[in-house]
Amino acid sequence: MSIVLTDFARTRLFPREPRRNTIQDCTPEDFERHLNDEPPLKVLDGYAPFCKLHVHRNWTSTRCIAVPITDVNRHLLRSDYEARSSDELPVLVRWFEGVDPPVAGYLVVILYDRAQLAKEGTRIDADWGVVGCLYTAEPEEIPMAPITMLRNALGVEEGGSGVSLDRAAYARSVAFWSTHANWRG
Image (cartoon, rainbow, N blue to C red; front, side, top):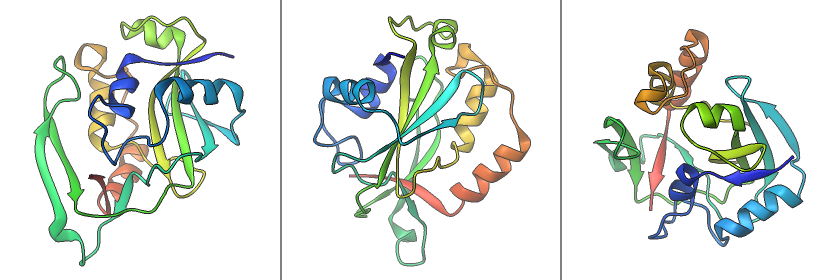
């Protein structure tokens, strides 16, 4: 099985201007090499048949991506309308500023198979393409953000995958993201 970084993931996980809330101490090439050379601790099923999650012990200093919202840090939450690319519609997002999350115990790499990526307009020369990565304390997936689920349901023309909304998964997502937020450094 071969794995490559998609351009979408490369720009989000390894931006030109390094940020504290992206993958640390690793080049995109080293990251890709690690995924191909080191077997994951476990493989989880993703939200659709074309999606798999490879759980790796964190070999970097990358910090957890989600932070619990508390009375102590609630005042540090920010929000704005943003698009992940120039082709997508801006959506409301929120994040913390000024928090210092712990180093993640695990990197949960989100993979799409070649056929799905081609359907979305991305051609790869590998079996699987990285579309994202979760930095977690436990070797488990954290729920996909509600807005990502909605975008996926809108279809590939709106930057999603074309997978219909699962109400139960959406409810779990809302429960998690009502009490957690991403952060920016």
